[in-house]
Each structure stands twice: as C-alpha cells, then as structure tokens.
Length: 162
Image (cartoon, rainbow, N blue to C red; front, side, top):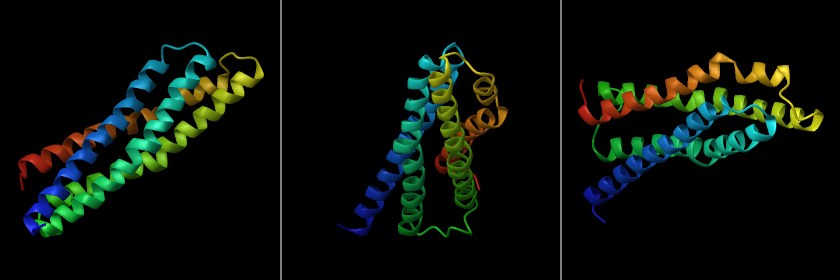
C-alpha cells in the first residue's frame, strides 16, 4: 500500500467515524425530544437506555476515533497541525465536542437512568426529582452545542477557509 493509498484509507475512516458520531448524537437528541412527550417512567426507560447505548457504542468511540484518524490524516497529508488555522480550530472544536459528551452528557444520562429506575421501583409515577433532572438546561444546551460544533467542523474540513 502506497502512502497515497494509506492517506485516502485513513481519510475514509475519518469521514466514516464522523457519520457514526452523527448517528450517535442524533439518536441521543431524538430520544431526548421524544422523552418530553412521555408521561411515565416505564415509557422513559427504553428511550434513555437507547440514548445511553448510542452514547457508549457510537458517539464516544466515534468521537475518539474521529480525532485519532483526523490526526493521522493530517500527518499523512503533510499538514502542520498548529500552523494550519482551519485544522487547529477543528482540533479545538473536536476536543470540546468529545469533552461535552463524556463529562456532561454521559453523566446526565446515567443520572436520569438512576432516577427512572428509582421512580419505577417506588410507585411507577413521575417523581419530582426525575422531572427536575429531565428539565435541566445544561444537557440540552450541551447536546445542541455538540451538533453545532460538529457542523462547524464539517464546514471547516470541507471549505478550509483559513
């Protein structure tokens, strides 16, 4: 395999993991929106379990692999990571995106699942603490910010504006 073939293969993997990252984040976002219509913890449970699986099976691993293969593609493509503006900006945005997923969204999903299980085991109705947890604005803002960051990164990677 020549260096050019390896570069295109690595770039293909980089693009592939951007799609799987979108899949994971999109699933999490759609389940969160759907959970606003649900009125019982038993109906919430499969939505949040699906969101947690999308995060652990798609979003987090894809974000990490996207970063790794992006770095490899930059090295093989001869780009200077710290001298190329669009590439450096993409790196910073990617780290923010991954950090938001790991430190905010994952923690929030685990806490919501705990509240759902507690509500189901008590009397099966929505508890005040579950409702409060679901209404927290930071995870919602973080989820939207992640999608916006991903779109900005795609624009930077496609148009290379600076």
